[in-house]
Length: 451
Ligand code: FCB
Image (cartoon, rainbow, N blue to C red; front, side, top):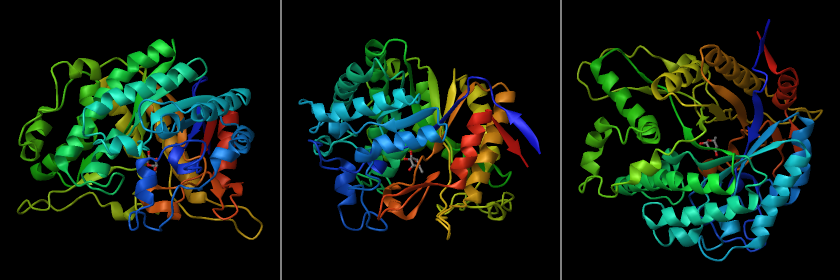
């Protein structure tokens, strides 16, 4: 056994998002969100569950903060529900919505937990969707209006801001694959949505800086290190494509390179009018300097060109590796390679791992203990990979487990449990799992012990 120490000021956190934990979907003046609408539409959520009540964090947040504090958690990444603040998306502000987050932030600060607030984690006001949503350019102004309201109110106390969580998922899973709200299947809409997400980020950053001087501002991307399934040129091309679609389409513009030329060419079949939604000075806004990049990492991708005649035999075989209940391969080396790649290719100033975790449904045994060894191993292995990246010069400043507690896993409903804390969705009781007790010790020692 070896003990691996993390840098002195390394931030140990945990993460959630508004729709996934809050419940109280129509209380205190909150407007409907696209996830309320989606989850209420039969057939959209695998187990027919909804976020209507879910963890009832909206009422139980003081207990949740206490629990986090008892687990030594230093930072809490949460998101703000836009329709609580502006029920119609724009215009009239709902003071009760602001009050909720104000009390939450004060409670966190009293507990000595640093709030990391995300402005958009997918629950768009339905009223804005009814006007066309992310594919339409008006949404950029709506987002900056919302950003201004929130950061004026909380900017004195929240010192870490994220504009968007995972624009790739919002754009493509929501608008091209249709598995998430709003459930569209339209490639052009997805690319337009992606552009407006990037642009609204760029336009929001200076507003946040004005309202919250000295605070850190960044964006959170879901990134996946991509591997060709064989050494063939065809599989190499396939891997370039996946990397371009998921990673470079967002990283390149954020770090000053505009959209990657190979992908603009690749997407041209979907873009009869080219990139007509991009205006002359958009990229100047998108490339606004930020303080950090947030990285959500769960698994790698393996790219295979199934159509290439006589392709090489596949050499990467993920089947021998462990898979989580999401069906995601456990591959911690991918995190190391991703982090070093971000450092060398993009020179990102500072990185936080804003999400990392695993879905396993282990529940309480006879004496009420939740023995989630597989999650504990997953977290430990990814922390080892993170530490190796730090040793290689990557400016990794903190780590947030996904998730603090079991919650509403989008289209999968409550069937997938990512929490370090078990939630009984009938009684709403919380029980820290073994991984949570382990994480508590990791934080106390600022170190992990490796097998
Ligand atoms: C990410 C989301 C987060 C959670 C995890 C499992 O894509 O940001 O809300 O659902 O996946």
